[in-house]
Image (cartoon, rainbow, N blue to C red; front, side, top):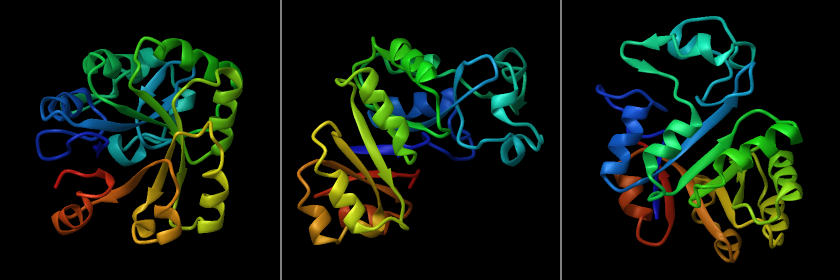
Length: 212
C-alpha cells in the first residue's frame, strides 16, 4: 500500500488542504497528514508549528483560535479541520495522522473520541510518548511509531517487539537494512521523492511518497 505525503501537491494544490486530499482520494490513494491543536483545542491539518513558511505570518497554531485561523488563506486554500478530512475520506481510504506536538492525555482522549467512527485512521508520531499515552487510553487504537534517519536500528528493533504497535514509519535510509526488513510489523518508508526511488522500491515495500 502506498500513501501520499500531505496529499497531492502541485501548481493546483497546496499541502494539507482539502483540495489536495480530495484529488488523492480520487486516485484511490491513502494520505498522510499532520495535526496540531489550536488555542481552543480544535484539531487542524497543518505541518508546521507556525504560519511563517506558508502564510508569512509570525504566529503559532497553538496560540490561535480556529475561528481566526480559518479566515487565513493562501490564495483559495485554508487550513482544514481534521474532521473535514475524515468526512471527505468517507471511511474508504487509510489516513495516517501524524501528531506533531506532544499532547496531554485529555487532548488525546478527545482525539480518539472525534475519530472513533473512522476505522481507517492510524495515529503516528515521532514523539513516542503520544503513542504510548494513546494506548493507555485505548489499547485497541491503530498506532505506529515514527523514526527519523538519526534513529538507530537498535531502537527500531526494540520498539518492534511491542505487540501493541502495529506500524513502523521509517526513514527511507532503512529500506535496505536486513534486520529492519525482518521485523514482523507493517512498515512504511518515507519520503519517496523521485520516480526512480518509487519504481525501485514499490513492489516489495509500503511507501509514503510525494507527488511524483
